[in-house]
Length: 252
Ligand code: GLP
Image (cartoon, rainbow, N blue to C red; front, top):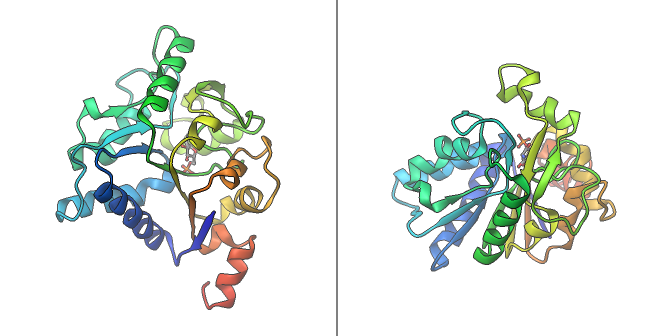
């Protein structure tokens, strides 16, 4: 696992964008795994900017979302497939037929999970973008998720619902369930790119990077991946040896 501590969220986003740009430039048929949430907002802004400047091209790229709320309704602005369109896809020429997501409004959710699992496995994600939750979750794999889990319906914890309440008019509007790629599904991606910023993530980062690999901390599975790059800002890194090293070298 490569762990890099960058100066701030903007440098984290630019470093991540460099890796995405290199991947899209090199892969003949890129398959990009996309996360949603605050951690990736600056990255997506940077990718849109580079696209407008002609430095980056999503031609031929297919995108696969990590997760989706259950039951929000297909037109809801916080539905992750809609968030991805408004934050990234529509600005970079990534048409709807090239964006894939689990359908949280499908009639048969179990069938939908197995359809999506098959689709992701057949496509083979080349570069998976990820964030980490404050409780150590990865996508919507909450603590207790099996390390070998696959795409399935999960109950969201109150911590996650409270964290995501900022995106909804009121906390009760946050769905109680979601569909998420499993921890084994995510690990199948050829390369993982993880962005974590902010002091509130420091304990989760320490547990994920330096603690045991355990389903109590789903993000600890990152340690099992042969090609994972983790980009942190100093507040997120502060409880790890990487944070201490960056302070010694003159970082914050
Ligand atoms: C969210 C998403 C994840 C995201 C994580 C961190 O709920 N389901 O894909 O990576 O939790 O969220 P944020 O980046 O908003 O802190």
